[in-house]
Length: 204
Picture 1 (cartoon, rainbow, N blue to C red):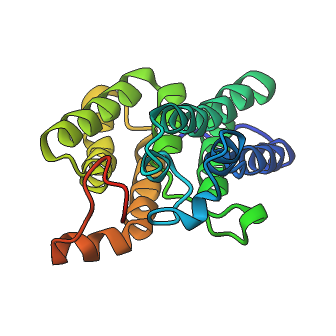
Picture 2 (spheres, rainbow, N blue to C red; picture 1 turned 30 degrees about the horizontal axis):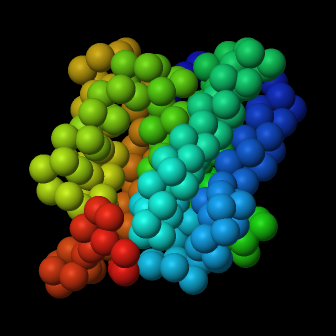
């Protein structure tokens, strides 16, 4: 864990800012802007890039991926810049992740947080971010199942942190990994039943 040196008031501001930024539902905004309909009525109904890809529009999916990852990164970088301290950066990143999976604007029914997870780790420590992203990419290319890639990537984060850093990000990684596994509960059921869709498949 990082040393908590930032005042409680500034940490609270980091939480509020991170949550509000993270709760912006870019998947819904992008698909509406491109005339693709209501994302919640497409495929799995999830607001993330994988479900956007089920519309058949790769540009929309890429835009959603970058924006969802970007909001995690921006939350971390702005907290680090404006507030200072790695404690504020980690708190803001966690809040952005929570905002994405539990957005107030959508009745706290959001995405699964994988892109935001990658984005915030790229900002916290680019080595960890790249290692986790590479893990996701390799598993996705081999297995062609987004949920499996996400679960492997999340689980690998703690191992990469232990291998490449002093471990100050480990608690955050464990919290986020548990939340990602919880959010993938339905995917785990489908994986067990052999009905989990493959990347690019239009219907969940």
